[in-house]
Length: 318
Length: 275
Image 1 (cartoon, each protein chain N blue to C red):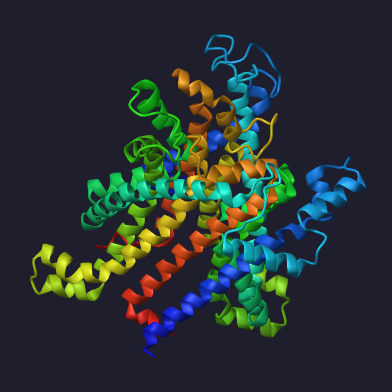
Image 2 (spheres, chains in turn blue, orange):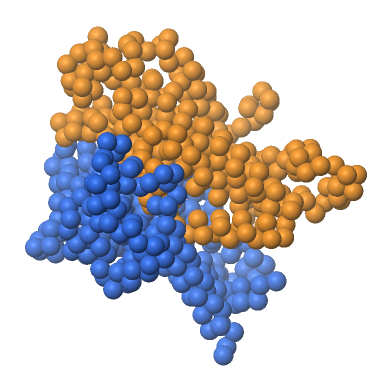
C-alpha cells in the first residue's frame, strides 16, 4: 500500500475514534451532574413516583452501557428517540431542520468562499499597501462584532429601512426554490460577513507564507513575470492551504449558524438546539449536539487530509 | 511605559484609550448611572428624552443605567472566566511541559478530544444539564476555554523547559512550584499575555452570544447580550436603541483586538514586515 493511502486511512481511523469518544461524552455527560438528572429536570417538588416513572421513560433505570449502545444504534439507524417536551419522534423534525441549516450554510459558503479567496489573494499580493491595511483593519473589526450585531444592522438597513428583504426567514418545505433563496438571503449574508473576515485573513496568511519561500524568490530573481510567478509557481502549492482554509471555515460556519438562526427565526437545527436547551429537553439536545459535532469533526478531517495530500512533507513527520 | 504607549500605532492607541474608558465606566457604575440597576422608572419602550436619555427598555427600566451596569456585569463575568481559564489551562499546560511522560500524554489527548467538539455546542449541552446560573456558566466556559490556553502554555513552556537554566534549577533541587514560578513563567509571559487578550475577546463574545440566546446571564442582572434580546423588537420600528448594547460589545472587542494585534506585532519582531 502506498504511504499516502496509509496516512489517509490512519486519519480516517483517528476521525472515527474521535467521533466515537465524542458520542461517549455526549451520551454520558448526564452522569456528570451531582445527584440525579431527574431531580434537576423535574424540580425538588417531584414525588418519588413521578421520578421513577420519568427515569423509566428516559431509560435511566437500565445499566449505562446498554443505554449507550441503544442510543448509538438509534443515532446510526435514524431513530433518535423521543423528545421529552413534545413526546414526538426526534427524527421526524430533525430531518427538515437539518436540511434547512445545510441550505443556509451552503448559500453562505457559496457567497463567502469566492469573495474571501479573491480579496485575500489581493491583500497578499499587495501586502503593506493601503489596500492591505484597510483590509486588515476592517477584517479585524468585523471579527470582533458579535453575530447578532451584524444581523440586526442588516435587518435595520435592508429590511426595516428599505424593505428589500424580509426580516424574518420563515422558510418551509413547500416553498419554491427561488422564494426559499430570497428569504434565506439576509441570514446567509450575515453568516457571510462573519466568516469572510476569518477566511480572508487566513488566505492572506497562507499565501504570504508561500510567497516568502526561497523558490518563489528564485523565480523572481531569474526574471519571471510577476503574473507567471503567481500562476505557475505559487498557485499549484497554494491549493492545499486554500482548501484547508475553506474546510476550517465551513466548520466554523456550522457553529456560527446557531445565533443567526435565532435572530432570523430560521427553522434550522441551531434554533431547535437553543429551544431545547432552554426547555432542558435532553434527548433533543444530545441528538443535535451529535449532528453538529459530527459535521464539525468531518470538515476538520477533510481539512487535515487535504493538507496532507497537498503537502507530501507532512507524510513523513519528523 | 509612557514611551511604549507613544510608540504604539494609531489603532493600538485608540484601543488602549477605549479599554480604559470601559474599565472606568464599569468601576464607577453606581456613581455615574442615573437610576438603580433594576429599578422600573417609567413606561415600557419610552423614547429618548431628557428624563431618560436613551429611553426605557421592555419593562420600563432606564436604558442608559442598564448599559452602564451592563459594562460592570458583562465585562466582569467575562474577565473572571478568562482568569479562571488561564489558571486551569496555564498550570496544567506548564506541568505537562515539565513533567512530560504519561501525564502529558493523558492531558493532551483529553484536550484533543474536548477541542474536537465545537465549544458552543458543548457549552449548550453542559448548560442543559447544569442549568443556567452564573457560577455554572463561568465554570463551563472557563473549562472549555482552558483547553486552548493549555495548548499555548504547553508549547511555550516546552521551549523553555529544555534550557540549561531550568536544568540547573532542577539539579539544585528546587521544587516544582519554584521552577514554574521563577524559571518558566517569566519566560512565557509575552505569548500568554497576547493570548489572554484573544481569549478575552472570544469569551466575551461567547458569553454575549449565550446571553443573547437567553442561556447566559439571567435577568434581572443588566447584561449587554440579554439587553439586545429583550429589546430586539424595537428594531422593526426603525429604532436603533437595541443596537447600542451590541455596539458596546463590538467596541470593546475591537479595542482589545487592536491592542493584541500590536502586541503580537511587537513580540514577532520585524519579521512580518518583510515581503
